[in-house]
Image 1 (cartoon, helix red, strand yellow):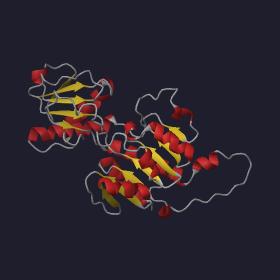
Image 2 (cartoon, helix red, strand yellow):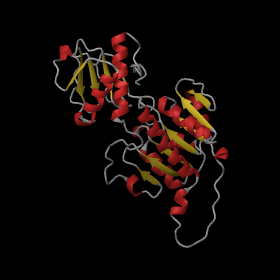
Image 3 (cartoon, helix red, strand yellow):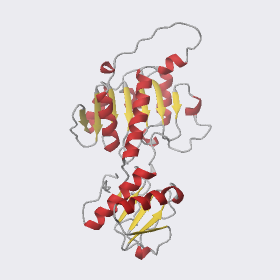
Image 4 (tube, helix red, strand yellow):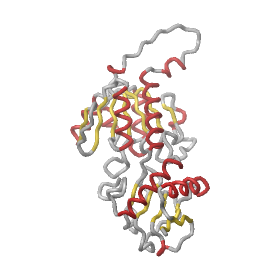
Length: 309
């Protein structure tokens, strides 16, 4: 029998219990799934960073901690966590992110906000450029960044992708390193942030880098709030350097009512909805990783502690 501890408060046990049991049954795994298992008897931990579990020291026989979220910055630095850690990448999460990014990219590309603001009986034709004439840059070419970048490329946008390490992806211009970042920013009429949050990416988009974007660029951030320096973005919006920003993630969530993003006419605030982990598809990933662990195979989406993701 394989003992699996559900150690997450959000998402809830009620949301995940049945999908996990179905996924384990479909994979032929003899699993005891519970929220209450003696630490020394736990084989795998299903986890989310808001869990009450913070000390992994007693879990001496645990083979892996399986995160339900794509982001692991809330756990990767935990010094008591010596077991393998896997982040969540699943079909539902990927499709949700593709749809959010594509929808808001097209919204800014077609300047739909322009027409929404001018429903006053005044006939003011505006013809946007074709996608082929609207360069897009995606910062971050992990599973989600790559999927979004490829989708936008297939719609006809010239897409540049930047990552810390060099990638090769058909249909994209792939850059890396500090010089590559400056080049990637210099052409980005629409900039999409899908980087993980690490010491190197925190405050990445500061006043200097915002100034490297083409004047009038639009920014989408469905990645991590601290990638952007808030005050620098507001200053760039006020000066006209940045035309609009659609933000789904923030340094503090929920975003406080007094935060200037709420009242800024060029900012769209989304309540961290760009993509959610879906219980049905996430459960399948959890089950597959447990199957792999029991078979002695490599785990999916194992976190590199030295890189932070």
